[in-house]
Image (cartoon, rainbow, N blue to C red; front, side, top):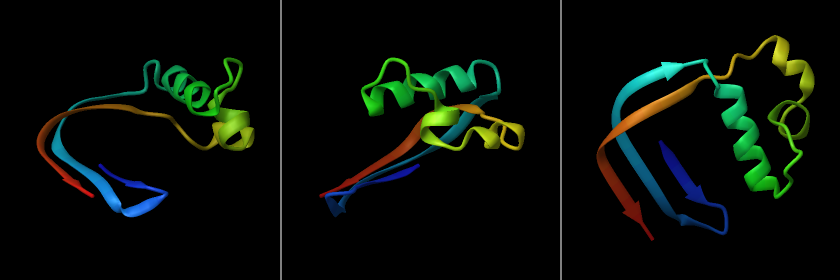
Length: 75
């Protein structure tokens, strides 16, 4: 996983690891929780508020658990 700071692209974190689990179970609920957190709206939903609701028919959310092996931070 590689994440950049949008205000400073030279600041980033990279996490490499082994996938421990991939599951569809509760994945959409987890996306809803993240959407609510980032949008600061307890009623927000991933499908509808973050991405188009029509994408629910063609996209399957998956929740992945990763065991970090290497972490690199810059900036």
